[in-house]
Image 1 (tube, rainbow, N blue to C red):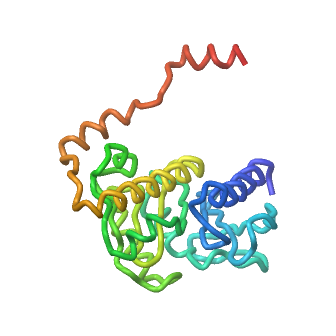
Image 2: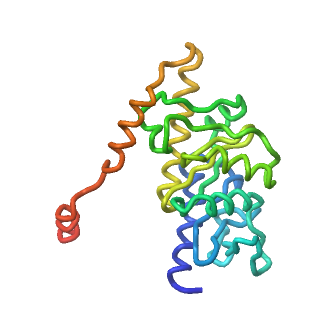
Length: 225
C-alpha cells in the first residue's frame, strides 16, 4: 500500500466517523466510496467506524472482485455504477439522515425551495423508487435518479451524494439533509413557493465561481501561514 493510498483510506475512515459526528448517520448504516487506481475504495460492511483501520477499507475492481477477507459494503453496486456512469464524480457518500429519509418515505422529490439546491446540480433532488438494498435494481434506479444531478433520495431508504472528492460529497450530503429539514418544516403550512428553472439556472452559473479565490490571494494566504 502506497502512502497516497493509505492517506486516502484514512480520509475515507475519518469521513465515515464525521457522518455520525455531523448527525447525518447512525451506527454503520452509511457508506463511502472513492475512485482509486483501476477501481475504487469502499467502506466495509458491519465494522464500527471507530474500529476501522486503513487495512479494513476494501479495494474493489470494476468487475466487483476484491482481495482479502474483509467484505465491502452491501451497497457496493450503486457505488460502482455511479462512479462508472459519472466520470465527474470521484466520491460517493450514502447516509440515512433523518429528515431526508423522512421525505424518502413519503416518496417526495425535494423542490427548489432554496437556491442552494443548485449545489446538487439542478432544480430538484429526485427520489428514486424503492428497491431492496444492495441489489442491482436499486443501483439502476439510483443511476437514473442522478442523471444531471449530484444527489438523490432513495424511497424508504436514505440519501446519496457524489462529488469531485470525499469532502465535497460529504458536504453535499449535509446540504441535502438541511434542505429536507426546511422542506418538512414548510409542508404543514402547505406546499411552499419554489424558485423557477430560470432562477436556478442563474444560480448554477454563479456557483461556477462561487467561493473561489484568485491565485494572488491564495499565494498571500500561503505566505502568511
